[in-house]
Amino acid sequence: MPEQHRPGRRSWRTWLAAFAAVTALVACDVQKIAELEVGVTTEADVRAKWGEPAAVYTEADGGRTLEYPRQPAGQVNYMLAIGADGKLVAMRQVLKPANFAKIEPGWDKAQVRRLLGLPAKTQRYELKQEEVWDWRFADNAENKQFSVTFDTSGRVTATATTVDPKENAGR
Image (cartoon, rainbow, N blue to C red; front, side, top):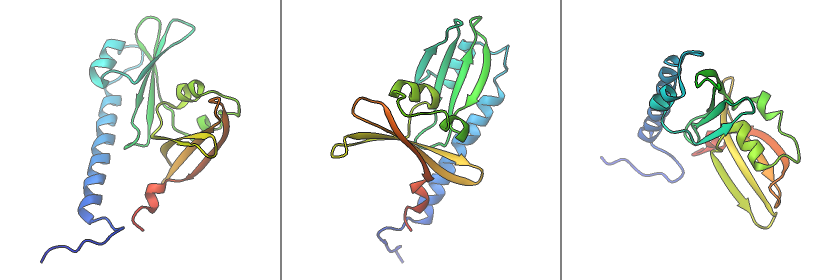
């Protein structure tokens, strides 16, 4: 007997496929991170294992930070710091409350992107004259969303943390 389609409900196969995809992404990142060694791994090694970064930021000391976002499917974004000598000096998962707390009204989009990496979603609200960037992240066992609101000049006006809307999808 064919499966009935129920609007607003996702089949167990859809959920299983989504879970498998996210699990594979996380497992892949864990393996990639395990292969990196601070002080030994070179920028060329990082690029060979992780691919081309979404952005590269030049640091005052001559080093570079490589941005590797895992949005929208994942709940992490990585910043890999390369020293002036071309070797890995730090690996940071940047989507965490301590970083969210650093963002203040008046910051511009470049500052926010530099701190958190590529957002999962951006949306413009023409009537309100604002733009909102969202990042999905895990806080302990809860899936959440961090949002930054910008005015028409591209400056932060507000931030908020909520339950990830995907948690309520299909309910």
